[in-house]
Every structure is written in C-alpha cells, then in structure tokens.
Length: 93
Image (cartoon, rainbow, N blue to C red; front, side, top):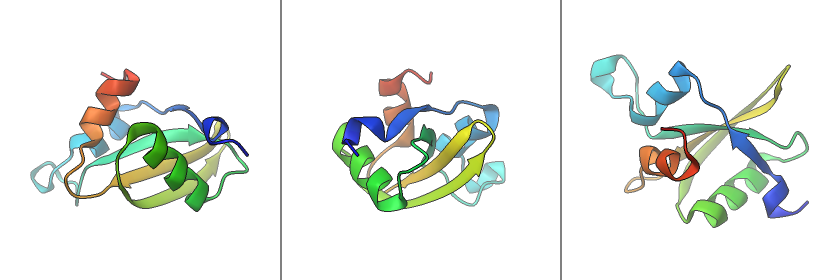
C-alpha cells in the first residue's frame, strides 16, 4: 500500500477539535491529538509512518476504531509538535 493511500481525510467534529488543544482544565487528560479517516487495510505502524512522512512530525501513539463511515485513527503527536499546527496545514480551522 502506498503512503499516499493511507490517510484519507481529517475527521472534524467538535470533540475532535477539543482533542487538538484540550487541556486538563477543560476536562481532557491530555491534548495534542488529531483524528483522521484512514484506509481500512492500514495498521497502526502504517498510519504512524504515513503521518510522520506527510506532515514531518513525530507520532507518540496511534489508536484506531472502525465505524460505519470508515476506519478512524486518533494520532497523538510527540512532545514539541502541535496538533493545532497540523490542523491548520490540512484546513481544519
């Protein structure tokens, strides 16, 4: 599978936006996460590699779940990288 086929599109909801910049004061354990719809055949390692290559950031962890509208990946960025910055680059804001 090609790297460009893995990340389909960002998933934008109010909750997803809160994950980007959420802090403990807002009731979130931690923020700095961004959510994407990904290829259903991609595993966590594929998603991590594709995201790091495309956006030139380091990924700390990837969580996935399958829903009716496709496979969702929540990607937590490493310390020193901003999910809000990535969101600005892909047009979330």
